[in-house]
Image 1: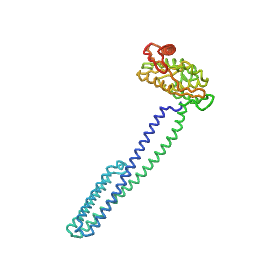
Image 2: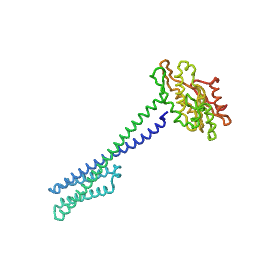
Image 3: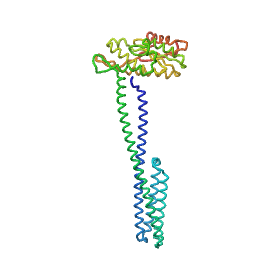
Image 4: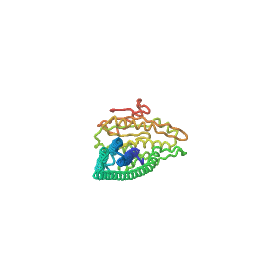
Length: 390
């Protein structure tokens, strides 16, 4: 199989994690932009309130004390609202030094309250002096400067966030398009691998070329590739001789119990009698393909007879080893074959799961399993039988 589904899913999981992280960045930047825009609006509101305060300063103060108090409350509330919005913007500290913004807000609050207090004092005592007028102008100039500084800072911050957000959005969209294009071809190839039989071509012709890739991607030993006597020519799996040879060369490295799974196709002689030789061979290749998906570095699969197969699983967990065999049985059961002359809804297998004693050879365990499947009355179609000793 050119593209392992497990490998594809692992890669897809990584891509999904990356896309999710990029989406979170976009969400945070958008939220931060909204907060910055809201702060700018609040600063303009503050500027408008200061203009109202300036208007009161130029009018009749005898009737404006209540208006002054209302403006003072609005100004203080507006400053508190700006500070609250700043605290909610967790992205802003990555774009500028928050200390400068804090100093600007402190200056804004200080000069706003000083300006208001000076006007209120003058309205109360109704006396205007040159020193008062100079102090008032100084406070108003400082207040306008603090407002201008904060507006410039927030506008620059908003521009930077919009630029970065646009860049991240473009990168994310481009990345998703690349993933979609790349995975379209890989998934199509994987689907062709799983549907090796072409259901629309006449004369029982099948797409089995993909199955030739099985032996290349599933950790076959170099020795079995060099020696054709150790490989079954039809299924490209190990032959019985190759399986025994490979196991004997590696068994010293096995520190686990060895489990042997021997199985055959149920009623295969009857099924084969209704099919052409090409169809029969395609079924064998399909079964070999499914079996190859269960072969790992320390596990070995083989075709030991025309419709008989074996799987060797060194493991420290008997339940896990047995569950792998059960999953293989279910996988083959779900495999469908369809031709114009006959519709085989599904194939089933029956197998024997053997716990090999250390003093017994692998060959004796396989022979015992084959004999059990041929002669034992306990054999049942589409099921596995467990043998703990023999």
